[in-house]
Structure formats: C-alpha cells, structure tokens
Amino acid sequence: MTATSSRDDHYAGEPIAEHRSRLRATVDTILLNRLAVTGLIILLLLVIAAAIGPLVAPYGINEISIPDRLQGPSASHWFGTDDLGRDLFSRVIIGSRVSLMVGFIAVGIALLIGVPIGLASGFYGGAVDSWLMRLMDILFALPAILLAIAVLAVLGPGIGNAMIAIGIVYTPIFARITRGSVLTIKESVFVSAARSLGATDIRILRTHILPNVVAPITVQTSLSLAFAILAEAALSFLGLGVQPPDPAWGRMLAEGRGFFEQAPWMAIFPGLAIVITVMAFNFVGDGLRDALDPQQRSVIESRGQG
Amino acid sequence: MSDPVLSVNELTVSFGTRRGRAKVVNNFSYDVGEAETLAIVGESGSGKSVSSLALLQLLPTPPARVEGRALFRGADLISMTKSEIRGVRGNRVAMIFQDPMTSLNPVRTIGFQLMEPLKIHMGMSDTAARARAIELLDTVGIPSPGGRVDDYPHQFSGGMRQRVMIAMGISCSPDLLIADEATTALDVTTQAQILDEIRRLQEEMGLAVIWITHDLGVVAGIADRVVVLYGGSMMEESVIDQIFDERRHPYTRALLESVPVSGGDRPHRLKAIQGLPPDPTRLPPGCPFAPRCRHAVERCSNDAPRLRAPAEGHRVACHLDPADFHD
Image (cartoon, rainbow over all chains, first blue to last red; front, side, top):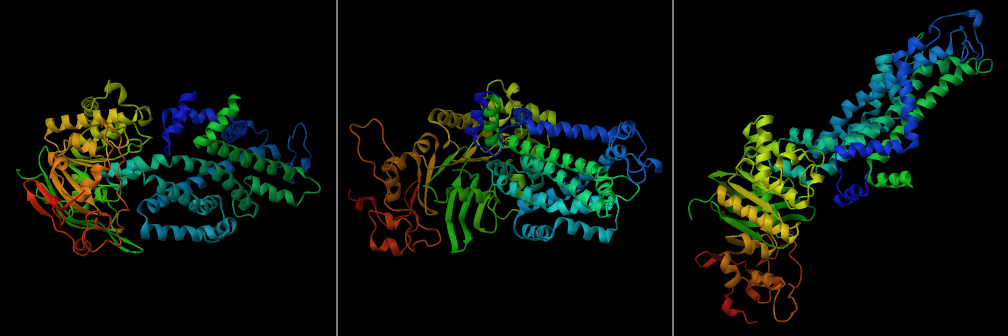
C-alpha cells in the first residue's frame, strides 16, 4: 500500500474506509504477520489432512492389532499405538475431521442465531433489545462447558448434539459483538440518508448495516473456532461428544489418560494436535483483528517496511 | 402565490427528557411554493434540522413527539402511516444531509447507492437503474460518469460526494428538496458550485427547495424567502431583499451584525450575541430571545409576541417597532 492511501484512511476517519482496496490491504497486512501466516499454513494442512485423511493414513482407524499394543513411536507407527494396537497417527489425522467439522458447524450455528439477534437488538433498541440481550446475558452467565453439558444432558450425547450445544454456548458472543457494532453504524448519516430515501428497515439492515459489521464478526469467528474445538475436545473427553469407536482428539486424550505412565504418547499426540489447532486459529484471529483495524494496520505496515 | 407545494401548520416538536419535555420547535408555520427556495436560518439548537426531520417522520418517536400538520400537495405528512411516508421519502420529498463524507455507505459503490431509490420507488430493473444512475451523475456534473459509477465513496472528493447526494436526492424527480446544511462542510468554491447546481436543477425541474443553514451568505445567494428561527420559534419571515434591508427583528439584526464584512474601510469589532440560546426544557414564558435582547422591555419576558405582518411578504414576532431601536 502506498503512503497516499494510508493517509487517506486517516483523513476520512470513517468507521470503515474502503472495500476493494481494503480487501487487498487486509490480505497484505495479514501476509506481513508471520504468526498469522504460520496459522494459515497449519490450518491449510489440517483441512487437507481432514479432506484426504483416509488416503494418507497408513492404517485403518479401527484396525486392531493386539500384539502391537502400546508401542512407542517408530518408523511403522509414527505416533505409536494405543491399548488395542491401533495406529495413533492414523487416528489423529482422522480425528481432525471431527474437530474441524464440529468447530465450523458449531460456530456456524452460533453465527446464524447470534448475528440476527444482535442485528435486531442493536437496530430496534428498546424492549426488543432488552429482552434479547437479557436472554443472551442468561446464557452468558453460565460457564460455557457447564451450559454445554446441560444442553447435552437434555439432548443426549452424540456429535450432532455436541455441535448444537457448542453453538448455543457461543451464540451470545456473536449477538453482543453484532449489537455493539450495529449501535455505532446505525447512527451513521448514510443510514439516515438511506431512510430518507425511502428504504425499508430490512433493506437498510441488509444492504447498509450488515456489510459494515462484517469485520468484527469475522475476527470473532476465527477466535470462536478455536474455542469451539477446545469445547468439543472437552465434551468428547467427558464422553459426551464423539462416541467410540470413532476417533476424536478429546476422546483419545481420555483413553490415553489411563495409560499415561506406560504409554504417554497416547495422550501427548492428540493433546499436541489440539494445542496446535487452537493456536493456529488464534494466530489467524489476531492477524485478522490487526489487519481490520486501520490504526493497527499502519503500525504493522511500518514495521513490515522497516 | 399559487398553491404551495408544502404548507406547514403549527408544527411543534418536543422530546421527552429526564428533566421534563424539551420543546424544540414551537408552532412553526410556513409555506413553500413551486420552484421557490425557502431558507430556514438559525444558530445551533434553534430547531431548524429537527423541524425538517419531523416532516419526513425521521425522528425517533418516542422520545420525540410531533404535533401539527404539514400538507404536502394536500396530504398531511405528519399523520401518514409508515408505508405511506416511505413512499414519499426520496420520491416526492428528498433530503440532503450536511456531511458528504459520511452520507454515503463506504462499502457500497456510488452506483449501487444511486440505484437504490430508483429501484425502491420506480421499480426499475438493475440495467435501467444503472443507466439512469450514470445519467444522474452527468446531470450533477461528475466528469466521465460511466467510469465513476462503480467507484467507492472514498474515491470521490467531498464536493463530488455532495453532488452524488444531490443526484440521489433528485433521482426520482421530487417536488421538494430539503437541504440540511448541505454546503456547510464544503469549501467556498465547491459551495458556490453546489449552489449553482441546485439553482439550475430548480429551474429545470420546478423544484421547491428548503435550505437549512446558519450561513447568511449562502442565504443571500440562493433563497427567495427567509425564515429566522430562534429557540424553536419563528422570529421573522421575509422575502430575501428585505431581510438585509428592512430587517426588523432584533435577533435578525444581531445575526447580521455578527457576520464579518469583507472590504470595509477599517476592521471593526464583530458584535457577538451575548449569552446562550435558551434551554428547551425551560423556555422563558415570553419571547425566547428576550434574555439576550438589547432592546427587551418588561413585556418581552412575560408575554410571547405573536407573529404580525407589518408589510406584504413580511412577518415578525416582536412587540417592538424598529423605530424604537436606538443604537
């Protein structure tokens, strides 16, 4: 980006500066951020692993081989084997499918419920706002995992219900973030201008407000993906998520717990997978946040150029 | 004057506040005729913007309460239903706002925003609306409109954005255009161009214009008639030549004296108006200007003056006669 256009950003002092060039600037800024790039590469590898997992995995996920049980990492079993002699490397790779799917679908649910609630709340204010936000406060007041366990207690354990539970838990975050952004944007002159031109509320929300609140929602989405994956691991660890014999990192961690002294790799590798994935999402989220904030952006740019 | 385009009658706007009801506009009445420009002048907080926002039901109710009538081509804007007034907004009555930097959505193209009213009110297809948008950009003097229509607002200068706002305002050929401080944020050269543009469109389209401003220089350049608002009440209404010559209301006089005059023999001290505008929650019982008026007599602070018409085309709300002013 040239010096002129960054000066224009400051001069305009608008909530959101531009679109086409803004997208490019955002991408540029993210690429300057080494952590964010690292995160992106890790996520890309994960997605590929999840997509073509069965082709890469050297063994079947439920290929039991009792003679090979509890073997340490070796050339034939990179991550070792578990108490039934199953290949941990294969199981970790296939486990990424569950983590990513639960993460994306759960956050998708939270987005689909939370964003409209936030839009309605922020835009209409008054009683609508009070009721919706108090409802969100109630959800928010409960510890996330406890709430998810409560939802699962009602719906019954299973991967589908785990996604719904995690989705419900993260709904209030999206509702709040959206509401906050809408409150600022709806006071913009261009919203009054659209209204003075005869636009309906729905039209104003759709064409003028929503595109202007996308940035904070995007950042929150990538950060929430990390939390959702953690939550799924926790629920599976507790036996409420993925049911055996399907592999999931949280479950594998739970299974490895009993053999921690004889076969620490059973817990270490799925644990590492969780840590790395969550960190990757966090790095990308932080990178996005910096890139979408014009003030931060110029700091990063000067750092990148210097 | 033939039938007015807009006839506002006893418009009163108040807001519920923690300290009681704030009366921001009091019994405001005026007419605007075809192809006529009415300037509404007043300092900040005089109620000039609020009175025009109330016309299009653009104030949030509550806390606002709007009373009175505003007959636009015979139909009362104030009592219209939500969908009726939406059909008027941007279609029969258009509005331009003060700050062209923020009046356009930064994430949508100029063309997209120009096409909106055309699609809403005229039911135009995307292709037709786009063609018309380019035409409109040309009308308001944007060079090579075909190439600029897909630009984003940040690629336009302030003056050009205000031209775009005007283009949006006139896109459905309205009968009335309300310009709320439309040139205040622009530099004087651009301001002059915008004023020329409005005057030209007015002649071509027979557009009635309400020009809200605190800039008396702009008023002199564009208005046919002037209404002076103070503390939400009309102080004086006059045809343009008289407001500068035969001004009668002490507030109008004070306003004119507080404007710097260039080209005088020697610089003289500008006369500022002492004090502050009245608190709308505690308006004085008499003339709202009485506490700051140099000529106020006892009667002024107890008894609100009614509008009287000392001459054709002139209405004034003051107990005194200019003959009584000694200064």
